[in-house]
Length: 165
Image (cartoon, rainbow, N blue to C red; front, side, top):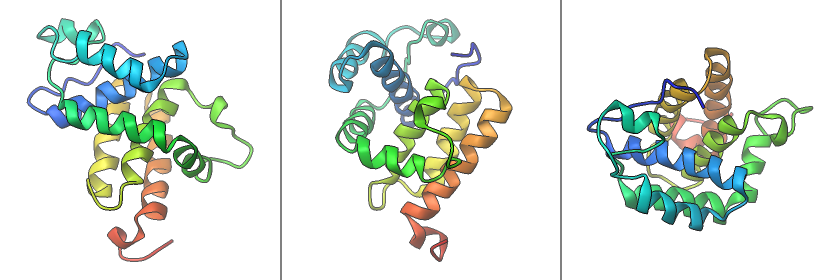
């Protein structure tokens, strides 16, 4: 992961999303369940430390724990649905495994939120995860993520955009 980690000072909901992306990444890399990783994060990373050095060490000092848990629970319980939504909006010859693992974790967290019927608004989900992407990924990958997130949001929440695509 990049050293330009997002610093959600004063933004606990953004902090929850940053932690969710990190936890989904860790879960995939270690093979541990999202629930196990969530408990590790709550005990050791969320609320731990202060200042920029906390982010450099993978901690998230300020994060809304209920949102963090909700994202991880949704990502785990609706994994197949989230992955299908992602697959539907990447090139036909791409597999999820071909995506950068951080990007995959970010898209899964966003898909988990977009699969909820109304909250948060789709535009909030897109903006939040693009901000997070900028802390972990290069500009080209961020543009790719933006395109996938926008397409997923329009497909999963067409009413929020005025019409289905």
